[in-house]
Every structure is written in C-alpha cells, then in structure tokens.
Image 1 (cartoon, rainbow, N blue to C red):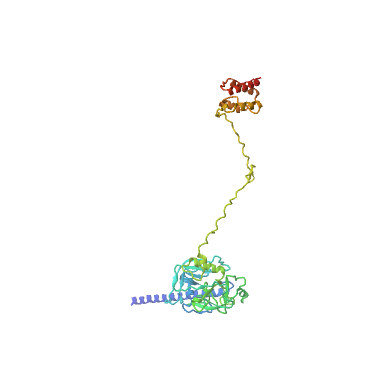
Image 2 (tube, rainbow, N blue to C red):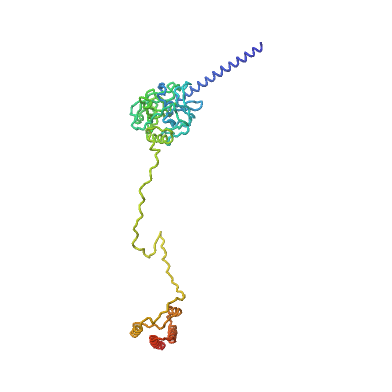
Length: 438
C-alpha cells in the first residue's frame, strides 16, 4: 500500500511539472510577441524611420505567386519580403541584407502544412553599389538563388519613367504586421495611392514631421488613410496590377517610413529610376540563368565592337631636297662639336711606276717646243722608285737643290744613248747642266 502511495505521488509530481512548464512557455511566447508588437508600435509613433500591411486583406492563392516570397532566419521566422523577377533571382531591399539565411517561395498560408513551398539559399547577394544606409537611397538588392523556382512566376519590372501616374492606385503585398500588430497567417495586400514627391514633401503629421528633404529621385511615396506597408514588409513589391498576373508591373519595393498607416505615406524604392533599373537589368542579364525577355540583355552581353578598319596614315614619301649645312647641330641645348680635321699621313712606301719610254714622243715636236720655251724635254729614259720618291719630297733648301741637280746631271751624262734622238737630248741636257752648275 505504501509503494502504491509513493507511485501516485511520483506521477502527480510529473503531471504538475508538465502543467507548470506548459504555462510558463505559453506566457513567455505571448510576452515576446506582445513585446515585439509594442516595440513596433512605439517605433511607429516615434520620429525615427521604420524599415517596413496595415489595413489589408488576404490575397488569393497564386494570384501574386511572384510575391509569395519570405526571407526567413532560423527559428525567428519571417524577416523581409521580396519578389521573384527571374526564375533564380529575388528582388528585395538592401537594408534586409544579413537578416535572413533562407528564401521560401510559394507559401501562401504559413500554418497550413499542406501548403507546399520551395526553400532556397542565396548563391550571391548584390546590394546596389550606391546604397546609402543613412539616407536609405538606392535601397535595392538582388538575391541569386542556388537553383530555379518552379512555383513562382516572375514579375515584370517597370522601366517606364512616366509610370505610375500621379493619383493612381497601386497594390502593395507582404507578410508584415497588420493593424492588430500581429504577423498574418496569409499573405496580405492593400491599395495605396501614389503621389508625386513634391506633394509628399508638403505633408506634415500631428508631430510636425515631414518628408521634405528626405525624398530623392530614386524614391517614391504612396499611402492611403489606414492603409500602408509596415514592419516585415520591407522588400515587398508595389504593383501596378493588370487583369492577370502576367500583366502586373512592379513599380517599387517597400523601403521605409516614419509611421505605419499615418498621415505620412510610406516610401518605396522607385525601380524605373535609371540608376536602379540599370543596376537590376545589367546584373540579371549577366548572372541569371534565364533573364526575362523584356530586358535589353544585348546591351550588356554583346561582344565589344571591332577595332577601326581604317589603315594607318601612310608615311610621307617626299624627302628633303636640300642637304643639311655643315654647321654644328644643337640638340636639347647641347652644341655638337665640329668634326675633327682629317689628317693625311704620307708614307714612304715606294710606289711602283711604269718606265716611261721617251722615244714614244716625236723628237721634232719635243725639240721645237723646248727651243720655243713651251715644252720640257725629259732628262732620263727611266726613273726608278727611289728617284720618284725624291722628286715628290719637295725640299726648299738651296743646298739640297744644288746637290740634287748635280746628281741628276751626272746620271744623265753617264748614260749612253744609241739613237739620234738620244744624242740630241744628251747634247741639250749637257748644256743645261753646265749652265746650272755655273
């Protein structure tokens, strides 16, 4: 009996523990959710920007399959929204970077386990290169998935800067907080009115807050009384809806705002702004496995243009007709030295000469010229190399000339001549030698 009582006490203790644990967990979860909602509501009423559907309703399943995108982080769940713009590319806000680890596509109702979806991880995340975290400019980011989606149909991005028209109604879609500050179980949508930036600048809320000075060309504003995007909607699409999903055009994406569903409208990134659209088009065309047909991908993927086909200019064929002067040439301030004079060295190498035959000349002509003073008569039949060298030396010394003349006369007089011409030359030369020696 004692054993039975102990067992009952043991079982009762376990039951009490389970009940206490369940109550504590439920209270903690409820308090966390209430705290998150209170924090969001407090921030919404403050003067600080809130990175953001109030006043919305449930979407029809698969009407906006491109918007059934949720960026989630571990057990914390949904963090940001997005839109599928290519089978492997999701468009979202730059300020969502680092807040998620998975991308869920196709989910329409979060608590319905029969609602199928696809889960991806990012292969690459590209934040707009001009993104300004302080001014929240160029708040666009591309997520390239590790595979392609088969459950979402990509939406077209607006590249017409004339759209939307001022005062037109646009649809914003997302998983953000609703009017009761709860995260919805079903994907939400609501309609907001688009206004020009200049008119949004003129709006002032009850606390004196205005958007004047905070709006830039890459931004657009839209809102209606009690309807707006809010926390958890960041990166979600702003759509100019058509008759069918294929006719929808995405005008912008949820970026920021000072309040949710207040006097001041929500602010969105304007996708048609040229710096935004060029960034999106270029990267999708270059990196997506299946870029959309409406994008001008030839602009980014075509090969470089051919090199010029014109041949280079021909080299001039005319050359200077005047020879350069012998004057020194000045280059870079330095005068070139004149060329050194050429020095000719006379060598004493004997020069071979062909003996001259004086009999080849006409004796009559030679004698007549000599007597008339118009010709000279050779004084030797032959002249060897030593005599020729002595003749070209050109000494000016008087005593040397006398010695040379005496030697020449001696040579001639000692020679024998066997012809009449030789005799005449011998006689004439003898008289000349005698006169010279005297």
